[in-house]
Amino acid sequence: MRQLIEDKSKIDFETLEQEKAARNKKFNAIVNELDELITDNFYLRRAQEFQYRHYEYY
Image 1 (cartoon, rainbow, N blue to C red):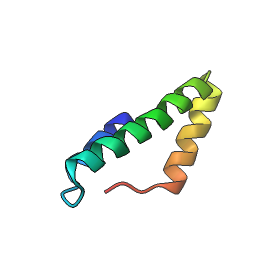
Image 2 (cartoon, rainbow, N blue to C red; image 1 turned 180 degrees about the vertical axis):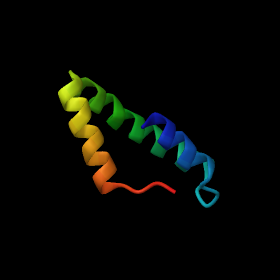
Image 3 (cartoon, rainbow, N blue to C red; image 1 turned 120 degrees about the horizontal axis):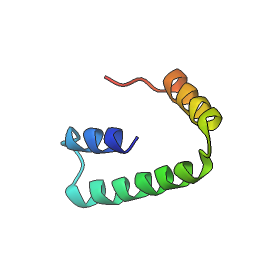
Image 4 (cartoon, rainbow, N blue to C red; image 1 turned 135 degrees about the vertical axis):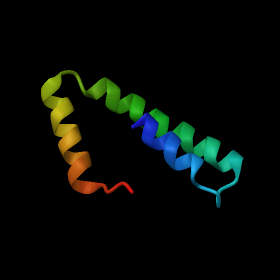
């Protein structure tokens, strides 16, 4: 997820750098929370399943 955040930020040419930095900080804080919640392989698989079902990446 951190890689997706970084990649999307790099190709976003419409947002100012300060806004990107603030947004990335917020997103990475969310990833930190998720990291604490994913305690074993079961929860990891459920999180991946949710991600793949609900998000599309181009």
